[in-house]
Image (cartoon, rainbow, N blue to C red; front, side, top):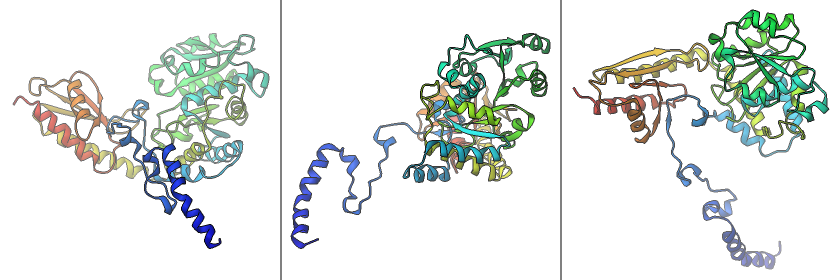
Length: 409
């Protein structure tokens, strides 16, 4: 550039800056300026949001889990390039299917979305007219789903989003009698396996006998890591998993694994296509790649070492709580969902005069804020697998402090 052009540009700079300053909030501008970088903003602090130590678990209301650095990097780096949406699903699906021993896979907008899209795929196959017709399935040849009474609650609504009609049964004889020409699908909620009268193998044997597809919901049933492929190997046609819990992928992502033809059919009811029931279940390219990064990291990590770390953290908190007279503890491991060491802390109300709700509130309103779950009038329950390094000591000390404060001895 010529010298006079440079001078002209510099003389205009204050005007440009002034115009930008009148449009953008000051917090968005920062002081980077000539360096060409953007000032870092702490939006949580800026918006006055409460942060807390999560000793409760991977609950959606508590924004589930925290993503690993590798997942964040996958999300951030992929956000800088354009790629074709279906290409991302194709390539990532191939890798995920290989890891999870399934014929095919896709990343969905959470486990709920996987249930909806998987059911849609069973109902429509590759018939685009049927895809466009969902959830109006009255004239479909097959439009019923069989579910055990002990599995028939909340999450069944994911399936009924497609218009399918639930048929509730209890025993093997009921199952055989319920199967008819309208039966499209058999649904199994893994978390509720102990509450049903028919277990996995028998459920599958009946389904295969009558050539009926099966779908299983294992949303929060990892760990153990083997569950990622256990139910595919067992013979379920579709497997649905949450991505934002122990896998520590994006909370808004999930996995649908299963037979190649069913995954292909499910994708017809999913983005990027329109005119279908899943258009609003969009999972962006960053989340798809982030989900793959999370899964890849999870299967490669040392799970025995992680379990030992959880046990050590539970011990730290347990020992701190037991120093208060009248307090008892119990360590358990849930058999299916959220299969990690869990600690219950109970107290004798005659010696520690505080209710469970009061203790939860004091922990919540303290510094730092801590979230735990309740389990009865005088018991709190907590998990440690979402704790950061050193937070076990903080949680133990705060619980001990509040119990001592309420102690009457």
